[in-house]
Length: 274
Image 1 (tube, rainbow, N blue to C red):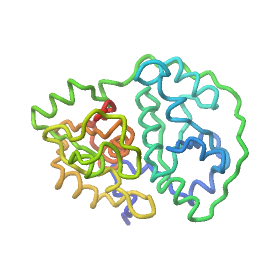
Image 2 (image 1 turned 120 degrees about the vertical axis):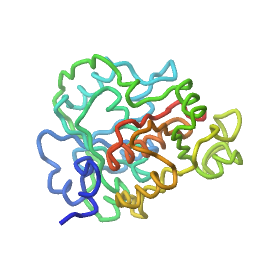
Image 3 (image 1 turned 90 degrees about the vertical axis):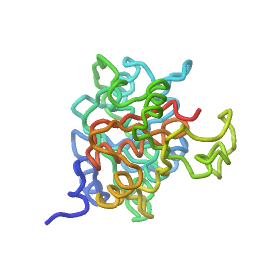
């Protein structure tokens, strides 16, 4: 019998909280916590989880770009990750930043990635085990990736502009106020970091969190199809570009379109509105 989970294009890209609790000590997996609040991990985390700081670990400290392939190899090596390790990402804010970390791993070609459905929010709500102990794993020798998959899953300014001019699917996943140009960041955040408000011409507004339920899990595939295919005009045969403010919220939508709806031509414009 089909379930909501098996109706996703790639149900293997999600793990449920009950499964993970039973498999915390499995070899071959690495649980990775990545939050907006980089101090949250220290207050308690899933046993065995390592912490990846989206800013300090994934972004270049000098130029506005991601770390180099050799730095990615170092990051994985010190966390005991090999190319064969299945990385299970989770975090706060309905896995918003966890999806960003997953997308960054895919950028460097790491294929075995999953998201904990419901993330940190659901795990805590179900009173599942948490710890402050920081795990220690034997250092590995992760090979330096031969390339970054920029062309495959990442869009740049000129490509986003071309997408707009061609009238191809372009999704703005920010809040409605940001899309309308009334604010320059989410309502509860400082209004800074961008020069002006508004949106890319032709972009459809569909806030990233529309894809989640109240418990931070993903909505069923049938609902996601209505949201993105019917309301946003996404078509399997056409390239889709998603964007937000700095590329993190749009990583969540990229995951939904790529793994849950099965599209293979979605790119994240991480330069986004900034």
